[in-house]
Image (tube, rainbow, N blue to C red; front, side):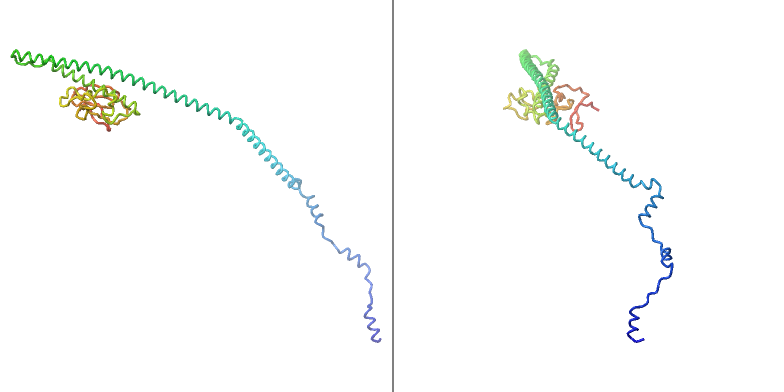
Length: 300
């Protein structure tokens, strides 16, 4: 064989035939894997009922819970909206009630102030009446004292003219008693005048007697009738500190505790209290300072 024949033979190789039954054998040996759908179908068919329906039931329960929550919130919102409308509707009534309440409070305050003012006015009138009565009694006592002095002078002149020894004055004790009573009267006038002053000045007493000169009828009441070392002032122009016999023990004090000693006579040991009264202390009593205030106490 030459080269051309060999090359032609190589270009066209012989095609051997397949063995008999090879195709059938190969098809029998081939086993393809099952598809995913077939696997899922098998699993679902083999799983229990609740497990197959659990995802759907869970989603349904969640959706139902959301619906219930939305419905509850909507109900609450509607309720709040109704309450808001009710409050807005009642707002004018509340404003009217507030105005009425303020008017009632003002009327009650005015009534209370009127009652207090009426009581203070009644107290002031009563105090002025007592001052007038005491002033009249003081004038009577002064007249009696002048008459007593005149009688004593006449009696002394008659005794001297007759050349007799002067007798002991039988009226000395009565005179001292009358002077002490006059002293109590003076202190009561002072106490009432100081209370009248305090009623006009926020229930606070003055710092001195001169501040209450408008309430005191005369500066004469500031001198004890038994105080021979001091001279009575006839008017406020002649008045000075040397005319005062009485001690002012509670200057600038607040009129609260009426048992506090307000004034005192160092000669007769008479005292005037914050309630406007005056009294004679017994020999067993004295005035002592307790917690910065003067009070009546028994002697030890």
